[in-house]
Figure 1 (tube, rainbow, N blue to C red):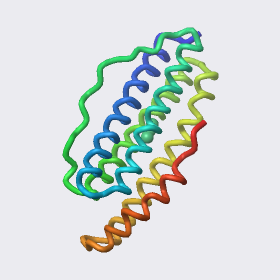
Figure 2 (cartoon, rainbow, N blue to C red):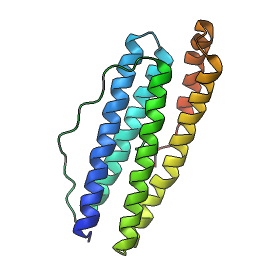
Figure 3 (cartoon, protein in one colour):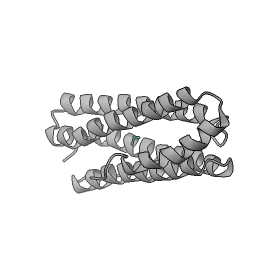
Length: 169
Ligand code: FEO
């Protein structure tokens, strides 16, 4: 059985993962309409990943005798300026998610909820991967600078990263 504190914290995370999915879906749509087909594919895949992250917690809460709430979400941004700015936002977002997961882990220790602590270890590992992927992509973008042909190749290259994206549980 989950304590109220742990259940509330997990429900907050469900909402945050759902909002992450919407943000990446919005990034995908922006990329698709700005000629970055590879980036769009990457972002559509990221949006699916985040939905899977959300569902995994939702099922966990319900299986442990709690109730996973499905709530309204904040609207994602719709304009991202440039591919570089978009990936900078993605990295900052993932750093924030990592902090939230760390806080959650902390709460499970305070509450002596070792089952949920164990459940969250998958997310701890996943966040290392997600931050690393975002940093790798940003490094590539910084190498390209503003060169158009470089961006054309980058857009093709990024499709390879979809295949190496964190695997589903
Ligand atoms: Fe579900 Fe990208 O954190």
